[in-house]
Image 1 (cartoon, rainbow, N blue to C red):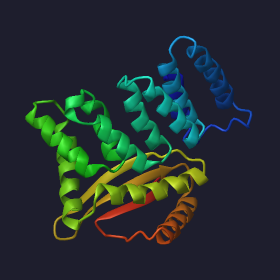
Image 2: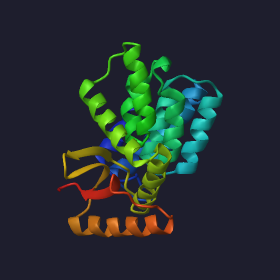
Image 3: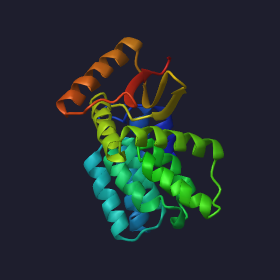
Length: 243
């Protein structure tokens, strides 16, 4: 899994196995290691294969691998990585569902996946989990908790649900996959008293400002086609890395 994480950090794009590159070479070596792992621990092998499939942008392969891993037993690790790799493929509705199954403070993985819960747009659920964790005296970053609560109150006031957020983010994920770019999403809370209050999910993309503008136009067209009703309190944007 460390090798897969290193490859993800090395490039914002999915690995293209059809191209000859250092990353594709490493990916093939890791795949051979995973094949060997099946002889020792099938549950861990399926989990690792799921992360590998996410590395190359294969959503169907990710689903199959984690389904098989979880069928062999819930290790905690495979549930956490299921959440993370749904996000890595831009499948935010699926990520929210996976987060709901593992993110509660009673599960002992609360602190590990709480940030992932916010990243996949499960703001209301993450806020409720954080409130319960506080009552249970489970430590969590106070600054992050304050920001989460602020975002939750804004979205709640506007009547925007986690499901609506996920649907909006799923469209952004579709656009990113068309460009072979892995999601790098940063939720931002903007609070200017008397001027503007809102939550923006910003995806940084490794392209020029002009190309990011075109991607935002593509996103807007896709939102219209999907019947997304825009609200000033919540927005999703692509932003070039250099910005």
